[in-house]
Picture (cartoon, rainbow, N blue to C red):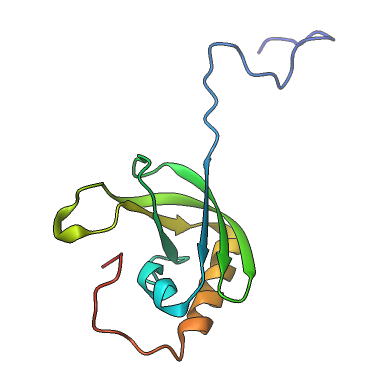
Length: 129
């Protein structure tokens, strides 16, 4: 193991290393019908479909800023779990499914489930499955 000298650049990132920061997505959902269409309860911590024309890959880390219904706000880390590209079959909305992460993701899932508990389940398809 190499010894470090006083003044060594400890904690600095070398110039040849690319740092990838999570992309930030911001979405506002104002009604329960839209929330139902975007919510993915079948993922461990839940998930949200975010309409976007931007290109993402499955596994991309993102940071989601979400404003819901009664002005509740959440800021949560997530991972892209699937993508719906522009021009998808059946006129599907382009966007990404974000699998919520961590304690904040679990909190958001509980909040959405509570908000949708008394919401009638429509027979129309959602943005998810």
